[in-house]
Image (cartoon, rainbow over all chains, first blue to last red; front, side, top):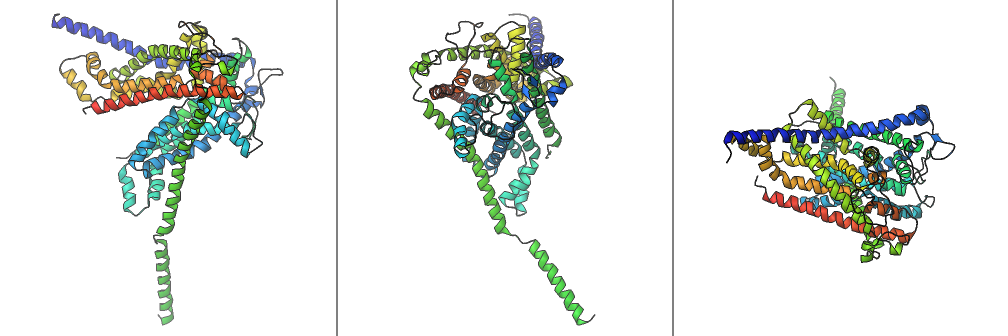
Length: 301
Length: 309
């Protein structure tokens, strides 16, 4: 048996080593962010040495892989936005409605039965949704609207909407649950109907969380890759018609990666420029949602 | 005043009172109807979710069940859909999962323990918190680009399993950190204080008391993040995982493919036969995910039953 003082010394030494090790682990997360920014920035700067900023942001033609080359990024943004809007139309109302149903109308046994359904929806990999879009949704759309292309933005938008539905539902559910019961009960006491308590008391009280969930859903739709790679196509154009084939920011990155692109070429640099743009947009949305919740969250009791 | 003015004033007062009464009428009828319409709308929302899941699962099942044979599991991919299989993809996914866990779990749990147990609420720690929350929301393809530039090129790991595993580890790190922190937060402070009161150092309390109590929650988080990693495609495509691999990888420096990429490859072909085997691959993937998630739920359930506080 070691003397007590020796054991204490060992314990203290152990403590300081372990603490430093774990501090390194925590610092690793900052290294990751720094790494992402550094990697994207380096190639993006190289890219903009060859392609003027004005062309990237002002031109509306994206044709980087064949002559004559054009590097206007708006068609990609347009395609991504089109799909994000489609996803928002499908996923946001259904997600909010589901959250309200689970919270205000469903008895607890039903709620406990339905929550796993949402978790399963959330856990299905995006390739599966892409497959679903190509084999089920696109043929269905082609049946009811014959002018639909084989690759189209609507199919991708619908499927991405189903993908974000559980996320919206879960976040809105948390937001609605955080509203104190006393507020709802006060409404009932004053003679409000269930609908009025839910829509005029519950939802406004949880509004910051609800709106934050919408923003995060759009952010997720912007960054979605595989489902759109399978369903939306690879024709970058300034299309407003969701039945046409488009290309998203992520779709372009995948397209180039699957081909043979040696480092140092303008195509290689272009995917980093597009990636940087995507990163900035999603960070913007995420930070917006974060501050929305922080600033405007109604504090009760 | 004369009689006429009095009656006029009287009837005006009555009119005002009528208007007031009309304004405060309960109008319960229309309000109930509004409520019923609203209920139907929210119910439909839930039906959309359930319906989508049901249609998706039945469609995948119908497409894939016929081609889900033993041959399918032990064959390599081939140009002929009838002979194609997922053997290389399964091996690749297993290798990736193993090495990803090897890297991500120690770093993630270590970071969580540091942030939750050792660090004080300084500005630096808040920066790290926001940083991790941000990282969780970054699209997976950006992680792929990070992996391509750092692991494949800078560290010259080429398109190997190691590069893929490191990329995936970085991807799931924020998820593990958040889940582990939640599990650590759930441990009552009284346990720590009791240990300190008996003279234990911070690390001694963590190792002997806090970590074991938080272990089920941490394990649930690890399992869920691993199942997320199993379904990820984009980052591995970025780092160059191949989509036609007719061999079994033998070590961490070999090239590889994973199941989601194989599915993607088959699903993007126009022929129906390839769609069918894509569906079979999806069924295998879903079974794997279902099992891991069920395991996580089981662990969580057992832990909740055992928890004595």
